[in-house]
Length: 506
Image 1: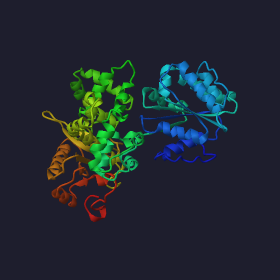
Image 2: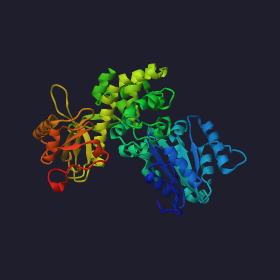
Image 3: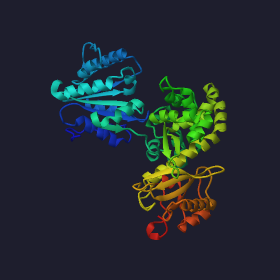
Image 4: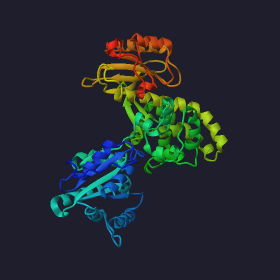
């Protein structure tokens, strides 16, 4: 897009999102003639609507949020909102979306007409021809039939099949795509202003990177210290009188009627309980294995789960829940929802004491491993693994009997050659300090991987722990045998114990 004609100040109260704001402002201010279409997408609850409302206020644009309604009701609501925006004595009567779009194309207080349609998937469900109509109207305006209009149309919607299909053809008719992604664990800690790192990790395991929860009742009295976490969970998360208690369930309840919502909930429950492969999920559901890929594909298309190839068995896919609150709900709230709905303070306290171990084992622990993998790719010092990491996933060593051997963090380099070089393998511990037996396990895994044909000559061994390391493991680190990563390193709060210049591994 072209350069801005007039800078638009970033509004106060908009946390982070500098890059997204700048791209949207540039889209609106592009001086080129003719219409342009932009798409704003991302998971629910991460600030898309807040961002777009701020943009329309700052630029004099028109914002309309669609709800679940028949086309006629939506058009009437749109016309009433447009009449107030344009100062009309009465709302126009539009018989279809073509009439509405042509009218909206000349709205605004300047040479550019910014129009935002939020909740785009909801309106397309009732008006499936709308994307084609938008394309047709923009072609008409671009051919000079729309006067001097420079329509800047932004279509906003959460991750759904509608948005996926829209983006699949974006190179043909969409001029700008802005994804409002969840805040990562470091930026989420800053948003919540949490000093205690163990507390920051636990809060993030519950609400993830959604800025919305910081500004709803969940953030009214955030935990002030590690000992305050239980109070916050009981008052702000497990209380049925507050919206967070119901939020996760509503995410899945919005799936189309043609889908079995109950099976979707049970699939997420299986994932929350640590069943990550299609076979494990099929066993949990007691359904044929052939049913599961279709269900997982449906959830993945909505951005609720993500599949990752196993580091050592690419044909094996591990699925993870992408929305932390969804995992917390299905591991902690959902099994106790009937009791929690009418529980008093004492009963909520007792339910949480029973569920706390489940939270640590099935929610916080796996989420800590996910953060460690994220850190390895995004934040680890450039020289740590010898070259820039391309991926960090979990891996299971091939086995014939017994439980599979899982390596929590497998870091590979550039994958121009398949698979990429094995830069590091690591184990993760959430609640227990790590000791020298963990290093011996890593050495055994490395020997086995070498026997399987992996190039392990420069593979670094790493222990990730939120509960500390034994003196023996600290001594092994000083000898350069292992790298120890704690929450201080994850959040960038602590120095590394030695540098490349001092010898050993950085």
